[in-house]
Length: 245
Image (cartoon, rainbow, N blue to C red; front, side, top):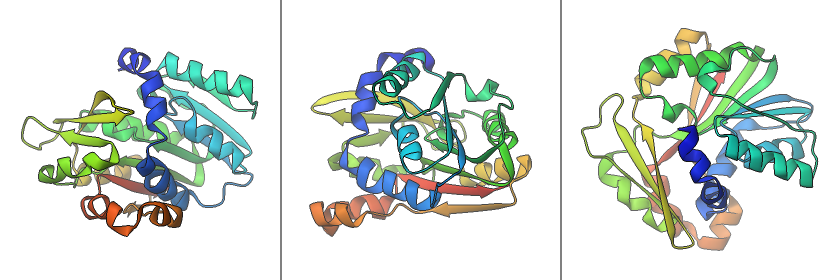
């Protein structure tokens, strides 16, 4: 996986500017996160630091970004060098992370959907849990495993579609194809049921779990209109997750 993301680092970075990522994904994410002032925050699967920088700009006292891709972390460090915010970055697979701190918040955008098995998901959740303070929160934006496959093509106008070549069962690969400025790139997520996610969260010790449907910013509605976003909101390709330790 690291080698593949090293090869699409620039394209993936550009995809963060797609309207749905700004007006739904980011808006939902920050609505879940709330006030970040003086919080310590661990950003898992941080990529090139798109959100990592925003967390610091929104007042987080300490931010540490972790990603499996050395190329992504290189891009993040380049941004940090150009406009220093005091963010630390390390290259590491979340499965191998272990305990590296004691944070108020652990966050992840599109991390858990790379788990191919229950065991891998459990290990990811363990890495999250052991790095949280007691009473801390895990907040994530993730692929919505409950989206029906017959609606996978309905998101094409937003710049991406999903596809699947086998029955929707535990571990089945779901291919995302993203289009940015006429150029396409693809990557795989993996299907695990919501029940499996709930099991993993409860098994590591999370006391409370909340699922958040995507929401559109007022700016997004004003710019594109309500009708433009209807297919996204009706089919919910992504989902927010909030867990308390």
